Length: 335
Image 1: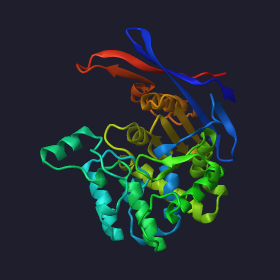
Image 2: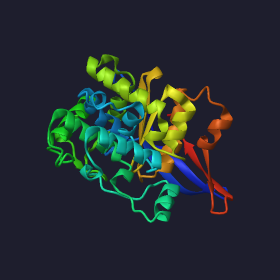
Image 3: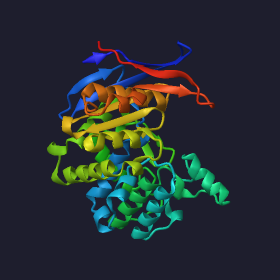
């Protein structure tokens, strides 16, 4: 069913101070668009929300098994992590297993996004390196893929490199979009990102949630990735992150992944469907609010207590003195 776009209001003192607009799609693994809100046909960049799709051909190549990646390391291939010590050490172990070093990564470096991890580095008079980049796990997976195929890792983030070509092919098959016709750009980590319709992003993750109609090797790759991320939600994001916290609440029921500029996906195997959404102004806070509302709508939160869900359903806004100043409130149109 088609609905109007979703609104998230930001209130202060009992009035609306700001308003976010979002588009969303709930898609079944057979391709049925179960519900859509707003414009789901205009291409959007999924950004990091699509990392599990980027990891699929690496798993299919046998690289993870060949190099002995454990589930935490496989989960990190799908992550936008916060640069905490456990994330960084896991990336280091992955690099050691495949015979590469930090300088072989091509993601660039930034300070850990978890403040305490950044403070710890600074207190030790150390600077971050590329392992602290939120995409370093994905890039370690790409290097493993290159090593498995015995292709040069040089320029592995280039759109014409064999690794990116294999990734584009896999994502094209999962999204059912001709990637050769899609707009693209280097992402924040320099790997390519392609713009695709939001409902096709939902379709890819619905098939990821229920890969029963896919080839046997892809079924196994989807299950391998899903099992890893739901067992290690900390690796997918980190302390205080919605992806991690909601996956911990819901156990093995859902894989959640954020993308920059207000993109979010959820893959839900027991319902054989996925959710994909995009906040028009790029606000992650609004994307998280709507994701909670849509998880409620499909019924996946039914076994979680209202007390546990309440902070996600009406997100309180507090000032630096922790005074409650307002809320994030999702308005989900029914028609």
